[in-house]
Amino acid sequence: MLKGRLDKEGGQLVTSCYQLKMTADDGKQRLTDVATAETLLRLVQSVPSPKAEPIKLWLAKVGYERMQEMADPARSLNRARETWQKHGRSEKWIQQRMTGQETRNKPTDSWKEHDIKEGEEYAILTNIIHREWAEVDVKAHKTMKGLKTQNLRDHMSEAELIFTALAELSTRQIAESMEATGMNENESAAKTGGGIAKNARLELEGKTGKKVVSAESYLPPDKKKLAQGKE
Image 1 (tube, rainbow, N blue to C red):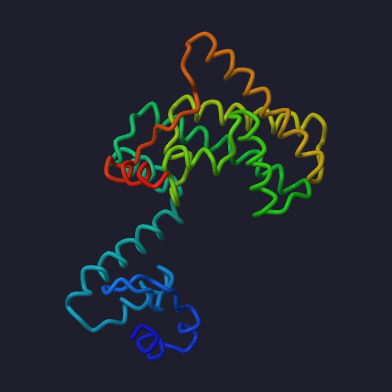
Image 2: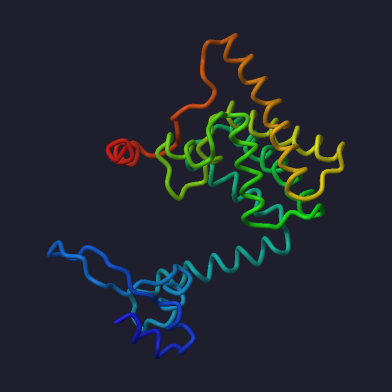
């Protein structure tokens, strides 16, 4: 049993093991031991079996790469670029994604300095900006694309990335100009900044006749079909 193995490794790990009802081979819902990915990987390290050796080697490799990235942060950027390339993203898309991430970091850095709490309040402001420019909130946009745990931005089109960046850039500059502090003032800046990007989006759509916000994603075809089948 999972808990038994964890208990041998150390009592503190047992607290990371839970039970959830899952469908068994007989079709019935039964309580099953589950654990976080971190706990399971820790458990794999303790398995005295040749079958676990490939995972142990992979963990050592990943750990070493992470140490290299801590010494040279540029390596993490290169790794992200390589990962997106393997997923079939174009160089133009990758550049826009990385630029958009930098634009995203600037308002969050500003929020931190102006009485906005990380976590829930960041999420609220992010959702306001998104809803204003896209006229659909983050959750609905993910559902539209058939996403679950995936990062929405990793499945945006180039145009969606650009308008997201415009909305966040506008929000930051407006917040700075009005010296916004606290949720109320930053919510106002978020609505105004998102509105600027919305107006630009509507103008572009009017000229091209093509919607910017779409259901297109980079999900593999089989996952797209599964997502569509559950809608």
